[in-house]
Image (tube, rainbow, N blue to C red; front, side, top):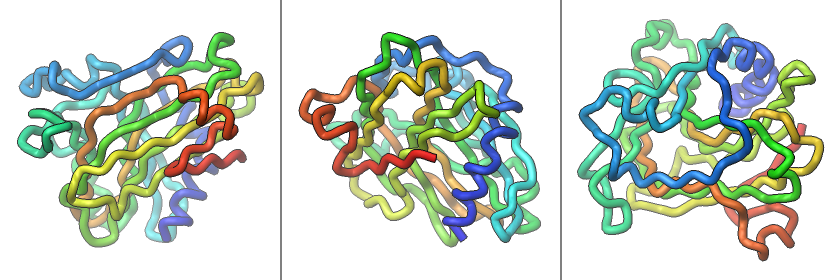
Length: 243
């Protein structure tokens, strides 16, 4: 079932991006966030920091139904994301990012599958070509339960070719530990990607209002070390797949 969902996601990429109403940042800027300086009492804290949300909806067989993209990420409430506290270890500090499903969507109640995305978006610039980007983060399992699943990703989409999905690098977070664990993935940026959309983020797939929460912290998007670049942009824990 989860494979069907991810294949349907790729097929739905055109509709997904066409529905997005926000402009991406130019070039892939370095980013580092430990969430300590964000105001956890502000409902716009995550959106103000550049995080976006949106969802794809599938029937129980994994067939794409519709989507809604993209909106500034909320901080708190029943949908998508919140700044949490009290979940960190010594390396995570007082505040963390909680990513979960869109429980405001009533289609949970009819058994449809909601893929809720929380992400950041850029446009690949000429200065990015030839570099390898590393997306790293810490993660800890939250209240994910039942048939819910969770994924971290790097994604590129070609705006000049029907928003085709050109890279989809993933780490399955469904079975991450209840102890904080560090992860990273890499993507080499070649000339064919210039002008394309580049995204990093997390999504959960859930139905029937089952729990789907995963905590994230110490998020970094930086150029990969030279040793990784020599290996062609692959990381130990990431998987690069071109379509």
